[in-house]
Image (cartoon, rainbow, N blue to C red; front, side, top):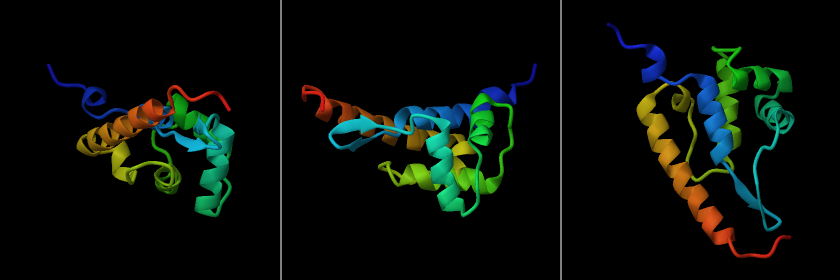
Length: 123
């Protein structure tokens, strides 16, 4: 019996969805994130200098585009790194050890952000 590749290297959709669930930041006293594919696609388009349709991001997240353009993967990392405690390199999507290291840092940052924000009145 051989090991399945999908168990040793998670797919890009899973990786991107994980990032979008954990990369959050404070804005005007509220915890915010990229709440939809449109906002993420707009930010990626600015970084790439080329339009990136939100439907392309949606297809990556759904797993229907399994091998997205390298420029999109790079831009996703750049956009999210601007708001995270760690640089999110393209390796995050392909190298399990990199993913583990970055996920740990993001989890700690999210815990800290959540704990620091807890108890404050809603804005």
